[in-house]
Image (cartoon, rainbow, N blue to C red; front, side):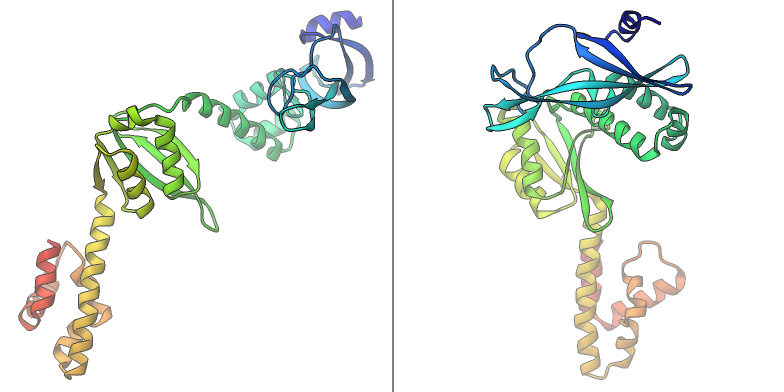
Amino acid sequence: MQLHTITELLAIPNYRVSHMVVHSDSRLDLLLEPSRFIPAVCSGCGQVHNTPVHSIGTIIVEDLPMSGKRVFLHVPKRKVFCVEDDSIRVEELDWLRGRFTKRFADQVYRLTSITTNQEAGWYLGLDDEVVYRIDRQYLEELAQKKLTPVPAPRYMSVDEVAWQKWHHYVTNVVDIEKRKVIWNHDDRGKLVLESFYKALGEEQCAGIKAVASDGARGFLSATEEHAKNALIVLDHFHIKKSLNDAIDTVRKEELAKARKTDDTELADLLHCKKKFILMQNKQTKRRENLLQKLADLNDPIYKSMLLKE
């Protein structure tokens, strides 16, 4: 096959095949060279600088298979001086995605959509970790397109989710009406949620009517500062947890008093093994009898239970 025919089959803009480096039963290596001069795009700032080329290197990238053979392209890449940060940067080629062509990465993503990373890697001859990195980068770019600009919700909820061990969190913002995640960010706390509100802008923040949260101080203070018209709603789980913690505090105080006054009957009812009776909603006949007896013996406990209800 003639080199110009391979060039036409590859259809890479502004590049042609100059030499066939390797040609075996399973692999085809092709050396590319620019077919015409085009300015180098800086990978640091994305701009074109009219500065001299510092040096030229070569990288090997994998392309789609051809005639059952894996295709590897030897691509020259220029290094240019970036005037934005005063450093040497490698040029950016829009048809490349790391060590693969964009169309090859697209095929990896299509395969991982219907099968596992391990099976896709076996089919393509790649390590499943490499497949995972390609798929993750592709998904991040798709998510960025969907979440930029940030859609403005009227009713939203915010919560952090642990996604790894050792306290690695992601903060998610959900549009309650649309029932989908509209924004997320690594880490948690006030500064993270503030970046969401700043991305919305003052006008859109003023249109938020309600924000559901778990009661984290950082989320509450950021919402009060930026979404001033929003009603803050605390979720049921954390409200119930706070009420149960309050009852448990009263239980401990009354247990200490009962032990101090040698009130063994009350101390036995307030023992830590029976503390969950105070916190459960569904009560059996035995639990109801214990609660009634506790209410007769101790007024503060009885009042705390009534306040919880």
